[in-house]
Length: 292
Length: 282
Figure 1: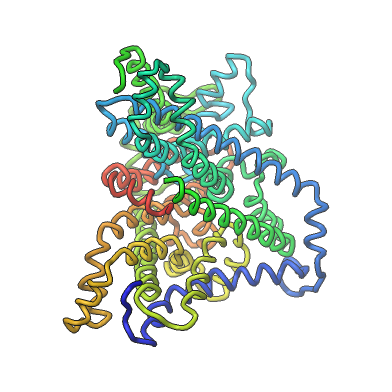
Figure 2: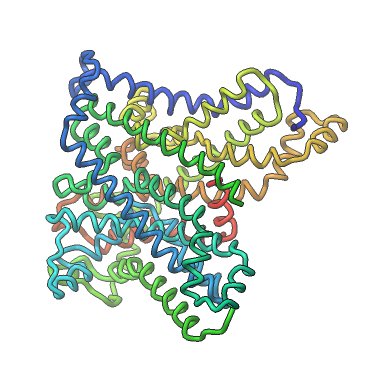
């Protein structure tokens, strides 16, 4: 138990800035979204009409919304799985070597600092159908690359750009996890004649599972919310709706489509999803403490 | 090293080097592209080796105008980005330190409720409630202002938790000793708590600076006046010109300049960066 100070008014003064910012810029808008979700407003904001659950009913009968859910799932799991596999491979290699570890780490982690929108632009130029070197190379190999027209290719482009940025993060956490695996276990297995490959799959990988699960959640959250910039700078959700994730759709319907009620209803659904993910993340943190 | 397997060591280095090359590939291409005149980018053609227009392109975007419909020079937008990033960083650290201090070292009614209100901000990222937040900021007349760029983003549950963890680990004897010596709450905060949390603050500073500098959607929505354009969001404005007219050399130079400061921070303060990353995920 911490020793405390007796003042009664001071703690409120200390909390005031944080509580004010939270109330004005977080709780008030959230409440507005909740309210707006039950109204239909014209595009100029002049009049609005209470329509009950109609916005939600529209949302859940809209095939485009389900398509966007599917897009989000495909996108998020692709980013998480591709990014984590590559990072794990690199981390295992970096864990093996003795000299130059820090240099390798430095050269692998800097993309963390690149803004998602910029990551999108950098990969866009490589894959630009008319002049991008990778697109031209693919064309000469018989693959007609045009992410302006082909929805799957647009998806691949945003997955690559988003993964590229996230590899650094996964790499650092996997490397830390690998370094925490007791050497004695691995040595014992080596003495018993297990090959490096077998040692990895039967000892190291299972012991890494808390890290892996933690990274899976973090990566899904990242792909859900922080990749807005990648999508907005490269595909703008297109072609068609092929790269419109749920978060992009809230923005697109609200600011471009001016369907404020529909956008608010989507906000409410998303808030529920984030709430759920936060709970999962925190319950897991409790478990992680028990593991170690 | 358990046993000596030279070919495996060789394979490790080879894999890592391939990884590094792939990770660096887009930046290499951007660097090359920025050294060519805009006319070098055409159908079926992109230069693969450095040209000689580099100094000109970089000089133009830095000091004259970024081009592609953005008439502001990059150095000016860099200044805006810096103001926004530092405003967000210092704001978040300051209000989180204060609220963690209140929650750990004082007992008052509704203490847990306050903690939960702060916790809720974790569940409400800007991207999720973008339209109503924009409306609130518009109602408060904060569009096109530095206050509008920073203030709505400075509430931070993560930073508050981090400082709470850090304060909880401070032994009670220290507080008692300070009180016996006659130190009031402010004296204790500035003379004991702040010096003890120095490393934590520095680590968080690195992470938050990157977060602040890389803000994209928020400045994009609330700045229409180019006096408040930040560097990262200006890329979107630059890409909005019609397809054939995009001057890729200028876009690439601007992109590289926009990523330079946060990348320099990560590489220059690698230890603090890694610590901040690990701490803020607890």
